[in-house]
Length: 114
Image 1 (cartoon, rainbow, N blue to C red):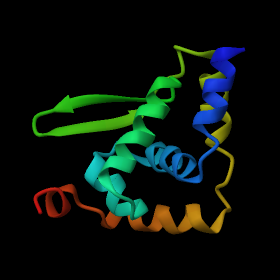
Image 2: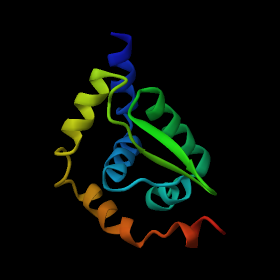
Image 3: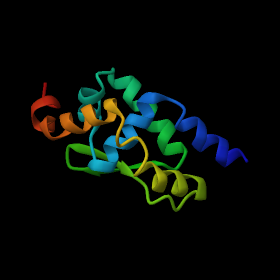
Image 4: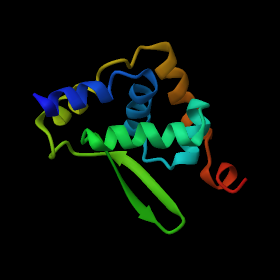
């Protein structure tokens, strides 16, 4: 039950749900996530750690960048199930649609070098 609760708690925050929905579309660095959600870098990092601890998100260093992406859910059947379902959930939500429109205009080279 502990693993189930960890995944459910990770998805109990609206910004973490938005983060999952963004990462469904593309892998992103912290600066890009920060720009899209309009929240502070330490807050983004905290959300990413919670999602990673729940087996929902992972990262890979690529030169100067640390790219965050959704896992395949192999570490937890609960994470796998929720990630699979979330692909279809909230697609008609106004906030999610606004974020989806914003993503193509967020360029890491422009925002991360400030």
